[in-house]
Image 1: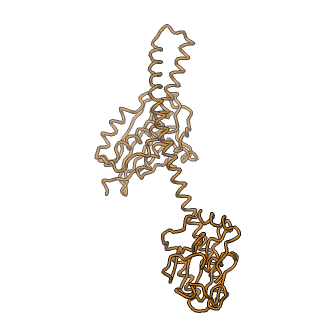
Image 2: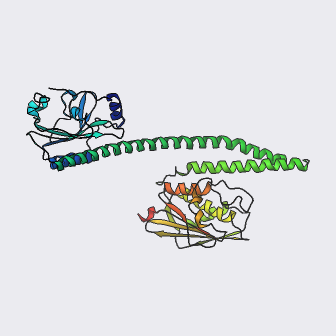
Image 3: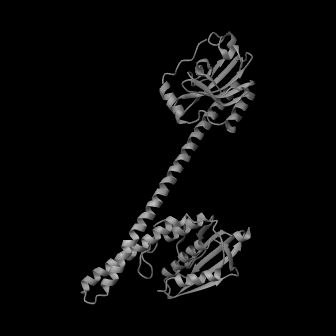
Amino acid sequence: MLSPLNTLNELDRLKDLESYRIMDTEEEEDFDRLTELASEICGTKISLVSLLDDKRQWFKSRKGLAATETPKEISFCGHAIHRADRPFIVENAKEDERFHDNPLVTDDPNIAFYAGMPLVSESGNPLGTLCVIHDQPKKLSDKQIRSLETLAKQTMKLIELRKKSRELERTNELLLEQNEKVALFSTMAAHDLKSPLGNIASLVELVLEDKSLDEETLEYIELIQESSNQMLKLIKDLLAYSQAEKVDPTQQENFLLEELTTELNSLLPNHHPYDLQIEGELNDLETNRAALKMILLNLLSNSIKYNDKEKAEIILRATLEKGYYQFEVEDNGPGIELNYHKELFQPFTTLNSKDNKGEKGSGLGLAAVQKTLKALDGDIKLDPLKLSGAKFIFKIPSQASL
């Protein structure tokens, strides 16, 4: 018997094989289909997806064979991987000097015929074979050989796809871990900054009460006040954005839209005149009340703060359609150009440098709204047919309709 030799680049080959993390994994239907097809095409009792490490050949898929692995020194596949560009065929192992006394020939599975096509990685390393085995001497036609080569390529593509899928899953896990760390850091930093900035704002207000300040000093103090207020607003928006995706969609409450809008009216900006009209017969709601309140407060506040008319006219519509609550917030403001509709929901996107109170937005409000809606399995968009003013349309699942 002639045992197979190591390949010339055996260390690289083994390292490459290890990178696939496929040895000793569970059976997979996609591989089993390929071995089934190989046996049918070649007319053999046995077909294997065989992978070779430093001591054994292990079968990722096997048809017609009970064993899951055999020692490398008696393997046929150990010989086959030395000719990576073409199949290794033994038509009658019982008369072949290399194999006639091989235990796999003299004992079960009594190999007489073997044909193996190497599975070559993207790095050019033969990792194993797709092989067909029979207990009687046999010849393959040119068509059968070409089919075996094709199936081997498909098997290797499947192995590569499995590796890339695993790498993608790991990348997603790492990104999720990093996102969680960033979110935690943002929350902690925002909380840590909120208190001292609040103290600065309070101290500034006390200083401004001093009527003896000269005009230049007063201007500096007012600049400090403006900056601290902007920072406090940014921190508040950062906290809201970082917490948006943590909304629990299972937290459902029964409440009246009428009561919610009454609360919202007491929270909306009062520096600019506005009129809020509620349309539609829907009043009884069952959903996450806190999340809906945050979403509506953001959209209604924007309709007031960025309105360029003497009086902001706002309409809130609520309907129940196909298992979803659909809300529309429509105003008579300056509107938003169509090419900005998708960009508007990206973090830190601001179309207007300042609102009608002269304050600069953080660009996080609408991003937090979209993030919250995604957590609730809802969505939001701008009506592209609205030519004057703006109309936001969003929906969230209705538990009441289930």
